[in-house]
Length: 198
Image 1 (cartoon, rainbow, N blue to C red):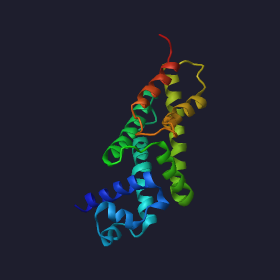
Image 2 (image 1 turned 60 degrees about the vertical axis):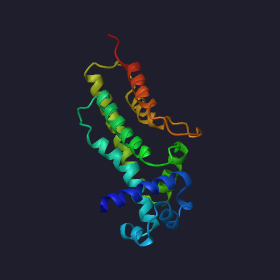
Image 3 (image 1 turned 180 degrees about the vertical axis):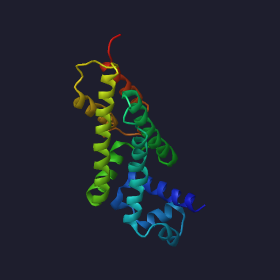
Image 4 (image 1 turned 135 degrees about the vertical axis):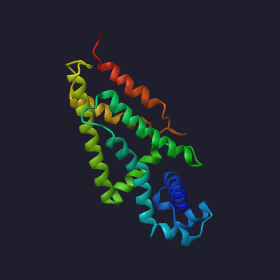
């Protein structure tokens, strides 16, 4: 029950922050949206800053950490793609749990920008994960080269960056809900481009 209530608070806060922005959402707004007493909110989170940091950590940082933790040193490109798609599936699940489905990339970017400029610890976590993901892509490409699965002329670091930035493929100017279905197509298309012709 306690965890359910905490999760409910985090999800509603995520939705409000995505739509209204951190600065425009007060504890009173959240209390009203949840039909919950102020004391209940303060039981779980000491203040608005702590709540915001928990939202970012829970929905934007931890899902990627979980996905990256599953990647072995021996992973090849298909295994890395699978890990990243599992991360994106977690984001889709969160998106599907909120009432307002019209969260787009601009909303996500706004929340991340606020998080990383206002809370240096969140930025450090995100930066560390970015570097880890990049190194895992590099390793997966090298493993795929050694296995003879991709062409020998593939530039490892450039290709790693291309795979890494597929997740940036949402159009920030686009309205309506984010389309998660495009990501498997993009990952697989890029992989097909560098595969060895057999």
